[in-house]
Image 1 (spheres, rainbow, N blue to C red):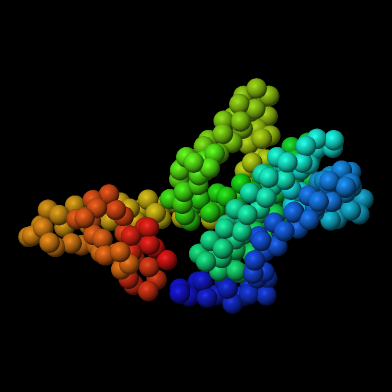
Image 2: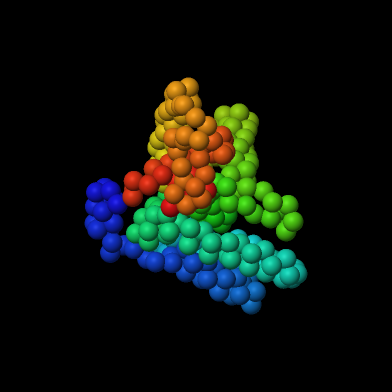
Length: 268
């Protein structure tokens, strides 16, 4: 473990909340039931900067309890309940994945930063309120860590998670640019930039480092392949599956913190 990670985790360990994403998911499930019996209950958690300034401070953060698919008054509960259950179950997976990759301290800090940024944006632009922005912020982080994880679209079509993430990102960019061109005001661009700021601060340096590392690996691989003597010799070998660049030319490798080399499928 690097000194930087030790410093961050030791300094902010008191802010760690193991299973925070799971806890919020369960609270959203509870609030879904509350909305069934009292549809007006959502009014007390909606973001509203005027009411925040008048003393209702909880509105800066309470919006995170709003379920992804709330029940509609007088409508059927089957589909909202079904999709809410699926989304909340997926977020249990996201919680486990992020905490395994980052630890509970870093995961909690990422979630705190996301909720603060989104709370400010949603309260200043309450007419843009959409509880799903919270889910997308966590989804993008999961897709960056596990880009090759496969979901079953419509329960039968396997699609890698990075494809969903790219489509969602492109959709957000198109909506922002279209609104900017149509109104002459970059409102949506600023809004989405703020609500996804914690993800961008973390992901952009990570993407740059990955691109740089990939280029270095490609150079090393080409140099080695041009000078190797026999076909049995390899420059990279995964510690887990024992695959090499000879057995799979498209395979990429990384060196973990324990100085062992892994393919991307088995990178700790």
